[in-house]
Image (cartoon, rainbow, N blue to C red; front, top):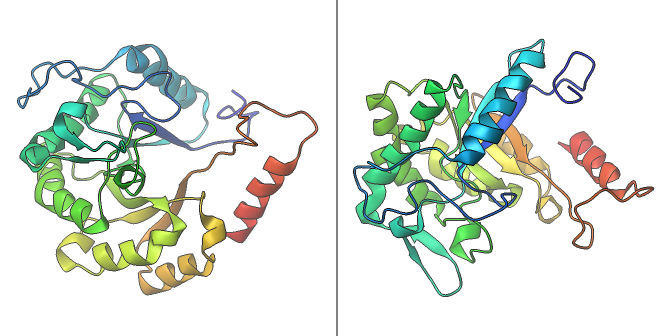
Length: 258
């Protein structure tokens, strides 16, 4: 009620992790326990979806006087679809490119069966993180790799399922990468047509000027920019620190800047 109700602050977006994320209580994806299940026979949602995510999404929709846009992003494919390095860095094995596209679509379909339709999605949360380490659910892609998988496998799978009207956002990573991803995706005619906008995270904003957002908007005015993730740990502490306004000041400064 405080976030979505008429007497609350009026949030109109909900970001739903596809499987586990870095705030999950444990590491998980879907179909974890059936390596090689290329037909996704054993794919199903989990307790986290049925008990927590879906009921809370519906409750927010009930409380909100405005439509709520629900969007999703995956942190990782099941481990059996990936090559995992000793550092924890990982990437999707090419032999599972098509399977993983269908895996993503199956998630969207199962949520729809539960009465939750997605407004938008990103192909991967923080693709750069998974290229260096795997401290939490992650999977690495370069901009070109993810672009080519999206164009060659994911978008065709969405179209085949009648889901190609879902808004597709690129990047879902740091502002330092905005220029590179805009050029790689928007500058490619075959990919530009299904790239609706760009999702941005704030963790490395101090390493780049906000003007990169202005430049991207001016160069590609038909593409929107949306900040999709921001959180603060103060010396490793995530709980409230009474009397400390530093987090609020950082959030306010970021909002004013962008």
